[in-house]
Image (cartoon, rainbow, N blue to C red):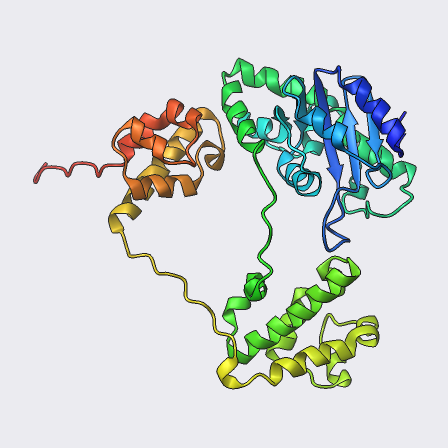
Length: 382
């Protein structure tokens, strides 16, 4: 049965009983597919024998829950913890002190499928219903089917943790993932810069110039402002495609707006005049004030560093094959680029590269160092 918690007294009783558990599985449901600003709309908690679904909109405080996650005596299990932890930290200031992330564990076992559905199917024969992956968790009331779907996300995590942890221990990789978990414990929400350049993050924006950029900026600002005011996901106000279409061929009348693909009759009826107003503002900007793309600083060519990166990448690929890991899990390209720029010659020098983990230095740091110097040239005639 699904235990639904929808008041503070019941939540406190639940937390009091869970405080004696050695581990807890946790998940959250948000609504980024529906709302402008994401937040926690459902909280799932499982011990080895009990699963509860908590409505955070119906409780007054999550302080006791925060204390549980901050207790180093309790191992907290997530699957793909990064976003959940960032959301909990931003909204409630909650951090976890002792993590186990089953997705990270699966990566270090080179599982062919690291999604929760794939892992539960493989190890327990459990099939997850994907019907509610994009459900509106901010809506109330939630159906019994939705609650059952949410509960499944944590109900099997303790057993999955046991299975994956046992395999990691057998392959002497437990310390590797524990280092990764420790880094996850410190993640925090990174606020998006709301400045004037936000529209440039749209794919394809930097291919536009002058008036087109001004139009895209005006339409983007209108859409984001409307989405924020209505608390609706931006794409539900207007997709990116019509923004670009209107930036390159701006409509000036409602009749012309009707011919823009992706702008439906309902949008035209409700917001057509607002869209045309944003376009008029952009068209009225003097030529001298039109936006110009900022020029990124150019990095001086460094053929020696590029050659070192190529050698490091080849060495990393061999290491990944030997360890039966995906290359990006063994050592990401960004870390290799930093090694190539610094050109370390000793194992201790690798400690100055923050992105390089301790387990990587210990496991294959020497192999990476051998790829840093240029190989000696073959003797003439040899």
